Length: 437
Image (cartoon, rainbow, N blue to C red; front, side, top):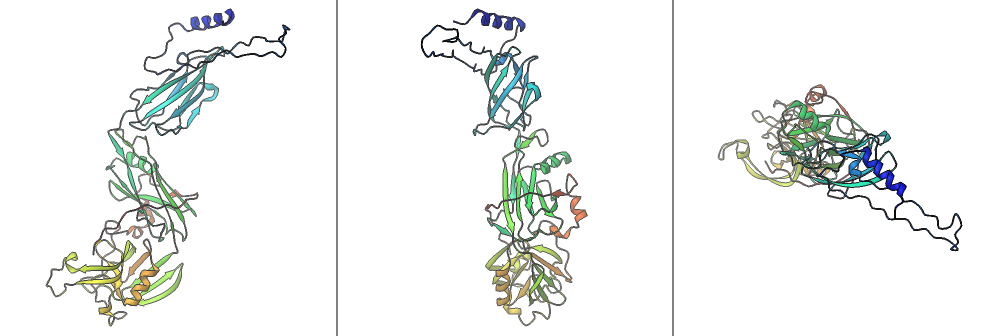
């Protein structure tokens, strides 16, 4: 039987809070505590033997706190718990459907608690809330928090995504969004949700190619043997008021040696460098007048041991004096429109002498095999002194490096450079290149 003094205190507590009752929308679980058993050593009746211990008083925590909405809670906002005047929040555990706890912050003095991040759309959480009143009575409650579904979720496919662990130093990071983002403030939200970490650290920035695609590149090429990690984490965050961040995604890789191939269309020579040192010089032929090779910096997109090349893919009709349809070996692709560095045994007599190709860089079979085996996706191929037009910055491969750093910064919604300090583990993902000649 509870002692009369405890009953009196509880009665006075209720009288102190007239009309306070648990909200009907909360699923409540009062904390139940049984009386504590006491044991005596000898069965004596001394003052200290078998003395009764008064259990702590228990109250309904729903009388002590109120929360942000638990039914149809707005996505993108934190969950909050606030103590009534004179009461305190002692602990809150907010758990998602995957069993993971959502981090939170308990305010000084126990006046309240809030989740450290926003609630994800269309998700149910369980909140276990512990509180205490001004007289030391304690209680606990459980609330099921259901969050409204978002009208749109913004997911992001990250690249590079060729399933390789190692890429060349010219490989940019890419983001393809599931929805168009046009508003400048919404674009800023997207950039804030993207984290680039590398070791060693670099200075880089994002560039909006269009409403659904962003690229990230350092001010200069990645250093050799750099570990890079890109993360998209916008879960639950509002992008533009009606669209919220979708699933977490990440991609990791490392760079290899700094490999650069310089093709001089005036001397018909290719100079191959590894980590700044010249390794090989190869006689080549580039595009003849009317089919001049593009000038500028390109990035290796893929490599094919044998590829079927047809002039019809570049607009030369079958039967024309310029038409061709043949198998080509040791082909290293540098544009989506069909520019390669490849074996051209039919033009060996012109290699190092004159330009006779339809835009590709041709060399002997042995030299093409050597070049193929010495390069990888992401390596740099730069053409100079050609009469062709400049390499497109976007849309025909990775011409990102042809924009000046000042011009690149202007393509960022935040308009600022990013420091990528921090370690980055490697990881793999999978995709395929588009086959195009």
